[in-house]
Length: 326
Length: 291
Image (cartoon, rainbow over all chains, first blue to last red; front, side):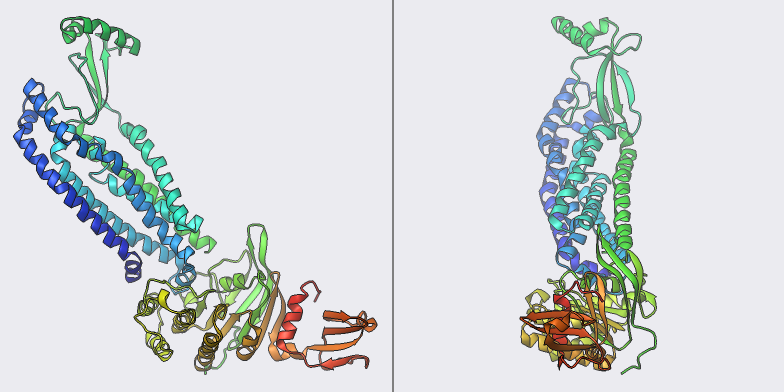
């Protein structure tokens, strides 16, 4: 089965290695440039000491502006790619057998078809895992200076580093295998698998992920200057976590309503020093966030969700093929 | 040649296969002796391919059972699969693989695979081992499929329309390879085909399927001996029992009847020789007649 699987998938393995080479060729020079810029702007020293000072904010902003496009916006076009790759590989496993009629050849050899599919799936999944982990390594290395400033929870980091990329690809692969079994054709199976992938992947990123653990919160001096998002820079020392939101709270700890906040904003902007005006009212700024040290916990949860779904779908495919017949 | 074992090579008992709401095969019961070369005939949609897929374990029966040398065909065991060699319709092959790679696949996936034998057979036919399967002619692809199936050393060889889409020369070569394999290995063969003339040369047994049910089953000579082609006056045709097919022209009728040599015929009837092709066609043309 090992040779047989290799023979059927070797073109995909070569394509995967070519992808790794391409990604490395593109991103390793950027990684070098990011390291040089990180050093020349003195970002490291800023993060270690006091990030609030004006020179540090300027330096970090300059650094992030330089690499924001490539490091953070990257994810917006890269996020469908694991889905597409996984769907293409997965849909071909059974879709091509049905399309070319070779299922009647393959499953009348002496390897029972359930075992045939299980072994093939395991070998291909191992290949996918190896290649996507390598890709994640390349992305992690390239992004590590940016991660120091933006944190590893930024979409450009979280979706590409660690285990998440592997989980996504395996999930799309499993969808492809099952769609190929049901639809018996490759291209429709790719379409269905990819649509299914995006339908799970996107809600997890924008809605479910921030709820993996109850967010932490901290109080600080009130300001209207808060920004969050990929290109924001940290205002406190230490590795930045994942900021989910800022709220103004009053002395009793009650969160102001949106209407109250909007009214205050107008009043504060009329004042000479808006921040001092807010301080004078006894207000605080509450930051709701996921701390940076939760990165690996979140990675494991994200991976478990997608790899777990993949496992269920693949088990379903094997069961269905074995029980119902071809 | 190995001595035929007393156990039937293939035994179907009340076998039925349903796809959605329609039955592709229903209440099919046949028993094929080991060593036989069986022709499976029937119109399109009669259930021939379904029966063959059930025999190979590619399908699981909706009802009844089918056994190959005593073991359930759908047991899914490696041993059950190893016993049956299958050449599917249009003899599918991995088109990107070379012939040598296909043989390597056969050896990797089968415990008793005889690669040397397959190479020898393909070499004898002048089929280059380093050629991609997709680049071979239809006849060569059929030969490679047959070589793969035979190299498994199966006890039962199942061939689904192996001669369709082959030119006459390729058809003759294929039949020749098959007959020599039968002579050498004593393998039991179940083969479906539309080309009845080809079947007569190869097969010694006939199973006729129609609308998912078995209508004829027996040794070809017995089947021929049990039918008579007669012609006579039309008014006598109505009283004739066991009519399979009647062709009336004016006041004259040609009948194919189920009647052995022992049956006495009224002297108004004139008897003719009945051929296999004629007999099968008579059954196929007239599917509504009751048994």
